[in-house]
Length: 113
Image (cartoon, rainbow, N blue to C red):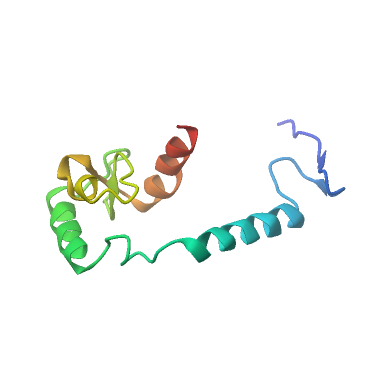
């Protein structure tokens, strides 16, 4: 199977196809750390004990991931609530997902929007 040639990044690093240089990794880590400094904690965003109970009940009623059929572990908001408390608690906006689907497929879909 053919392999793409390594690429030369702006920083001068030669990186195999599909990989990232240490400079890109460090820059992304710093960017995410700056973002997290201003982000409220999960509890402040509404994920409290009331949410834990509602989540457990929802997952009991919806034991399978809607994307792949594996056991669900995450209650995902179909439309991101972005702090809207009414949308946060709207059960018609919830879906059961497994962790891999939530962490990869769903986030890549949201990034494309």
